[in-house]
Amino acid sequence: VVSCILTAWLVGIKVNERGRSAVNIINRAVFSAGITFILYNGLMAIIYELVLQGKLLGLQALLTGSLYVAWVLVIRALIGLYRKKGANNYTVVLVGSDPNMLQVCQFLTDSYTDKGYKVLGMFTDKPWEIPAGVLCLGAPEDALSYIDKHRDLVKEVFCSLNPATET
Image: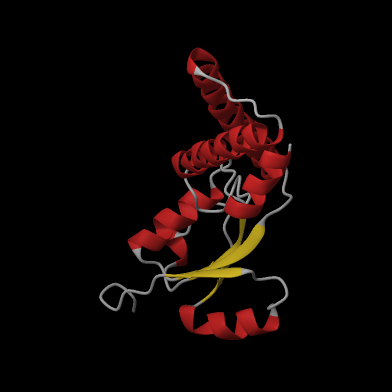
């Protein structure tokens, strides 16, 4: 337990950061498992003069890594379920109708997503291109006044204005 607490203090606990891939989070879990493994064996060697050797050391390393990754995946799944129910979401506003912005909008509004974002609406000159279920909040030039009025509600703004495609 002491080695896990020290690892969390040294490395930090970041199980399901928004925008991080599962692979990135699993890599961090493996790194944390390695640090925990080293700290645990170091503490055991100092306190009890106990040093595991050979197969036991390999088994302990394998179990530590596997359990850390399993723990992270379980927590990540639980946070995903929690976010799908509408909790722990950042409310965002999208500005622009660039093809990239439309892809971002589709990605953030997919019903299966657990990224933790709730799209309040989109500012665009092309409301007919907005995916179903997303509100058109006005033209891109209206975005600043909306964000200023709703600064307590809007947590993030995604903007993609392309002069070649915007009118």
